[in-house]
Length: 341
Image (cartoon, rainbow, N blue to C red):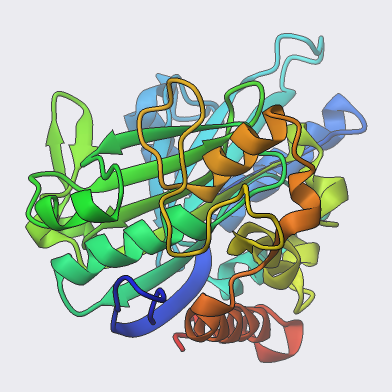
């Protein structure tokens, strides 16, 4: 992948998947809530001994006083459950599941077993595996420079900060991985781009999680789907079944992966030039900040943006990986494993 007049990156493979998903069920009546929860307990093989060990205090109880970490069908599942104080029926539960790296087989199993499971939150991710940590830094810079989210108003940076291409070289051996977030007007995170390595090399110091930059082997682009932001309507994802229709990843990630450049206006920088930052933002050279800066200055920027053809090879790899994920999450092709391209 080459960014014209700047840098080149060799990408080993691209993987598209769901990093984490939160599921719950809306109940018509307290009795139905109780029945569906008991069914969930049985489906996930949560024994009375497990419930007792996780704070219920009573092996007959179906509730937990703290989260229960469970493993089922090869996936890590966190179960939160407690009596719903808003419902008078004494056994009516409030519950939700948080599944990390859910396989398509587990999603299919839950969809068939528990009707109307709702996708409350989901992290749709694309991992770009690189040949070295230096190439990780270069790809991070490229994605940060060109990715644009229409409703993004602000950005945030964590870890290693890169202020521009000239600064990139001096930061190739920085201590910590870098992370870049595009935020909505209410400061909620829409998209995160960050350098990372394998989970086993992740560091945790005083609840601060990071990777040493030398341990990074990929860049992750992650879109945060949230039902409470209306994403269920925007991306047509209400239940698990909608994740298995063979097109969900395209609907979500084709909008999230949106590299653009300016054109047709001499006041706007050319693709390889520095993109100025907006106001007191920490780092510049991001088209997200530059777009908002020029828009605030009265330029009709929307008329002067186009797809970044400089990244056509990266875009091709990305789209093929997204399509592969859709094939894997098509009901006709359930295999239990994500497809790498």
